[in-house]
Image (cartoon, rainbow, N blue to C red; front, side):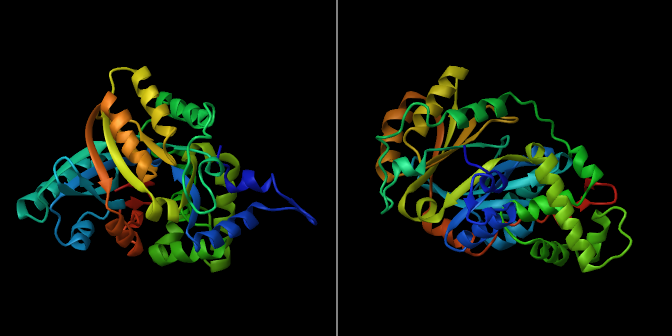
Length: 361
C-alpha cells in the first residue's frame, strides 16, 4: 500500500515526539521541487464529472484548440507504431449534460480542419498498480524485476477489484452540496502540498469575489476567515470523506516517468474476467507502474504502463501477443515534457460550476 500523508505521519517518530500530517505535506512540497510527486487521485464520478478520453490526430494550434473547450486536465502526445501516426490524448472532465457539446466542438474542429480526426473513450477512475521501488531499482535507477514476488501486487489488485465492482453513479456528492467549498479545495490541493494560506490565495485568484459564494454562513469576508475555512474544509475531507473522493495515493518520480524509461498505452478487449486478471498480473510483474482504466460506456480497457525499455519489448512480444489488443500507443517523451513544462493541463472548474445552485452549468 502507498500511504497518504496522514497515515505516513502516524508511522514516524522523532526525538521530541510524532511528526504531524502538516509536516509530511511540507516535506512532499519540498520533494515536489526535486521531481518527486506524491498526491491523491480523485474519483471524478463523485464530483459529477465524466472522464472522457479523446484521441486526436492532426491537431493545429494546440493552445487555441484546448482553449476552445477548456474542460481538459491532461494532455499528452503518443505515437502509433502500427499506423506510423502521431496522436494527441486529451482527458476532458465533463458534466453529463455537456458531453454532446464536446462532440459538437470536436466535429466543428474537424470541419474547420483544425484537427484531422478523433475518437472518444469513457473510463472509470483508474487503479494504479505499483511494483515496490526498493525491489526493482538500484541507486543508479537501473531496473531489475527478478526479485518481484507473487504477493507484491496483492493490495493493488484487491483495490482494482473493489473499484470494478463498486457501482459508482455519476453524480455530485452530497458532501459537496452541503459544503461547496470542498470542490475548489479538491481540485486545487489534490496535486499540491500547499499551506492553507497558499491554497486560499490560489482559489481566490481564480474565483475573485465569487469565492464567497462557495462558503456557507460566512459573515465577515476577510482573508483570515477564508484561510480558516480552508483549514476546516481540509480537516473535514481528511477525517470524514477521504474514501468518498480519493481513489488512492499516486506517486510519480520524474526520472522514472519522464526520462529513463518507456511508457505506452494499450487498448484491450477481454472475453472474460480471468483473462483480464491474468493479463493485468503479468503486466504488473514487468512494470514500474500500471494504470488500469475500467470501461464506463465502451467495452475496451485502457492500460498506461511505465517500465524499462527491455521490459516494454518483452511486454509487447510475450504478453500482448496472447490477448486481443485494439491499439498500442507509445509516449512521445520530448513532447510530453514540453506540455507539462507549459502547464497546459489545469482544469478550469470556475468557468462551469455554479456554487449557488451547487451544480455544473
